[in-house]
Amino acid sequence: MLARERHLISRRSLFPKKWIGALHQARVAVRYQSQRRKQIQHSIAVKQFLRSLSHRNTPVQTSKDMEVSLDRSVISRALEYMLLMALTVYLGKQVKKPSRFVGRIFARMMNSSHSALTDWALAHLPIDENAKVLDVGCGGGKTIEKLAKTASLVCGIDYAAGSVAESQSHNRRLIAEGKVYVERASVSSLPFTADFFDAVTAIETLYYWADVPNDLREVLRVLKPGGHLVVVMESYKGGRNDWLLGPVMGLIGSNRLSADDYRALFHGAGYMEIELFEEPANGWICIIGQKSRVPRVGD
Image (cartoon, rainbow, N blue to C red; front, side, top):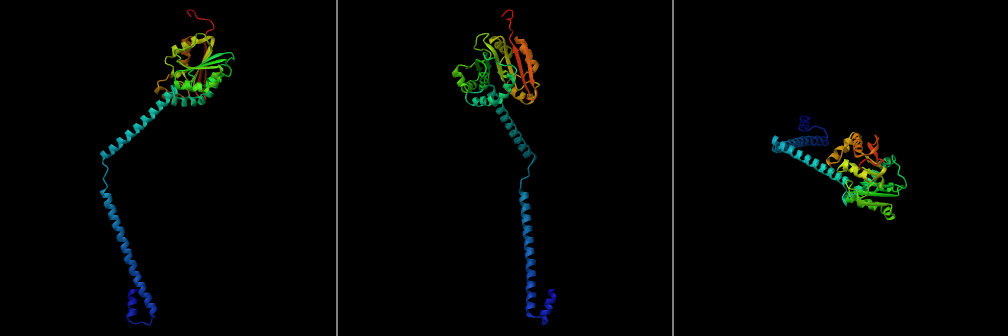
């Protein structure tokens, strides 16, 4: 087309000048587009070249570098695991023996979380309105409050300062009325005379008793003849919750016992008429033992 255009111009054709001007402008536009295309292609080539140089200058990660990175990852994971385990143990110890300040928060939480478990256990042993009851490991004091609705006197003991403080605060009205008494003490050495209580309860506490056989006998001492001990736990060996709570209990040095273990311990401590109840849906267990109505020879 350009050759024909030159031919037309050189021959001084009879085409109008505006047509010839348009052809010239078209030729200039074609040349500009061609040059512009070349510039763009050149720019792209330069960018690709520079990019390739930057990649070449990037240091290659050696196997040694990868090993160092892996070591750091393993150390980081290990530290995270240790921190989690330390937190788990700390929380477990607060549940086991609530401290004066932080522990009171846990005691309040247990008031709520153990409420249904307590109701289930007490349903197996109605409390007489004239009964004197001891709650061993009284925690936040909710069980004391429940027992005081029927019993004439409820005493609570706990070896944790935080639990005693929270239990006293929770039951301050009943304490003022003389229906409740709470003090710091251990189940291994109960500060009460023999044959004093009609019933003793231990809600979620036997895990933490230092010497279960001797502690059971100490409880037996303060029970009246014919009195009952009620022990209830939400986790026991072979129960539904054992897979989750069992390892945690092991970390904090708690007792992990099966239903047969509890029955054998009660029998060995001298309890009679031993009854065992299980609630499979929730993984709960309740053991009730009675003190003989007839004193044993040698007592």
